[in-house]
Length: 142
Image (cartoon, rainbow, N blue to C red; front, top):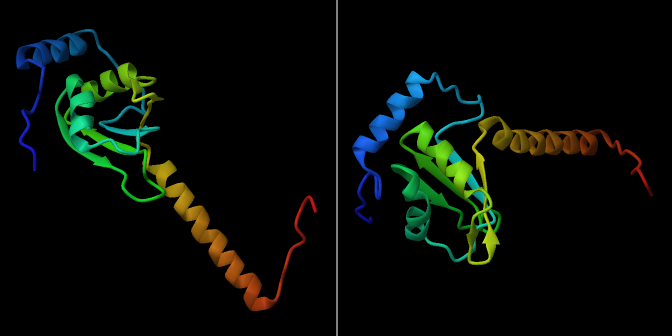
């Protein structure tokens, strides 16, 4: 495992002052903002170290997961220590060019991630029931 400073290129005093200023101003974040970012359109050959170099400039990172299967290549999850750091990274890195590819940085939404799995599960269950009872539906558009 690579030993990394908790906040590379980021001074603790600056972070503390930014947090205090945000609280004084009563900054309220939108409900979809959280510490976990979902990143798409990454180069397939990108490493976790390169991800730390890109995303670490915006604050302390707890974890980075880079996709390594056929379905997940080109994607990653970046978990920040602080929600304000995640928001700053999302704002600045959406559209950032990495090796000729423009990053798509979104906030992770658990309900969206599991919605597709649930939908696939329901479809498989429906297909099984149709096969069991010998039902078929005419295909639309043919």
